[in-house]
Image (cartoon, rainbow, N blue to C red):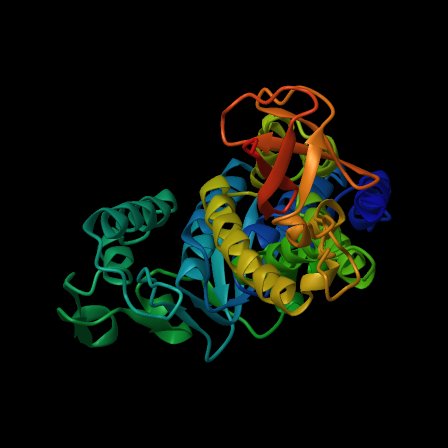
Length: 443
């Protein structure tokens, strides 16, 4: 809990550190922004910051240095919107590869320049294992987005469709001496892209691109991801965030149910702190998400020690889940990750609890000691030796009362009959604390 509260207090300052690297100069300048990793939500957040800084610096032109194998369609679509809506002219300089979603980003730029031996295209939608997605709606959406991006700057829409749809056919005999037939995904080399109008020039370096743009003498401002943004891109990865949630949930539960370890609680708290830190730096999580999560965790802890018929636990659980989901860029993806994490964490906690049966918090509420004769405890004095002995009723037995045998008094019952004071009785049965008597008939 302390770790999470500390993280909540530090996140604003960490966010400001992540945003540092403002351009040192203002005025006509060329801003160079690298796009050299998988396209995902972390990259989207970095580019939003970089474009904002370029605007603050009154940049004359933005050069995106693209070298990527692609990534998430959703993030690529948002990055494309960012490039199109920018008032600053943008050139995509493909330095190596602009594959899949990288092709879409490049097509949204005002101009495309390619390095010799670089490649653009092969933009089919694939799943995490690299297998092509056959869903007609998904394919149709992505074809439409690629075609729209191509037409934005007067490029051949059929080529864009052929880069996505293996069934698309386009005749490129006149330009590059070959056709794209059904069953293939189109990609173009720098030479071919220039011939078909998918690039404006082939150049070797950013400096050459600046000269070609006739922007010699301008300040060149390089905006790179900060270390915090690099860490955030790694943290918001769907696999990594799921692992962090598993560690966080399991660590907190183990600490609550098996107190005294210390380490699981610290590790769990750090895992949650990393989760929110990454999403905060990436621009997805606000302080309200962290407050919801910490409040939910606090309510669940209170429920363990102050039972409220489950009300606090339910409210806490909803608050905790809401904090995790609202912190993510994609709520559905976050919900799925959370469900998977909860299931796996519960399995881990059950396994650990079984190996530490004597340490659970529930043991504080359970009497484990057995009051057996072997342990020296006797629940009641054995009275079987009284069977057959005679005594006298000193109270009326209706049917319970008291008798005296010798000098000892005993509480007894009859089988149902009433016996007056002074009558002689005999013990017929003794079981536990029960002594059963009957009247001795007079001679």
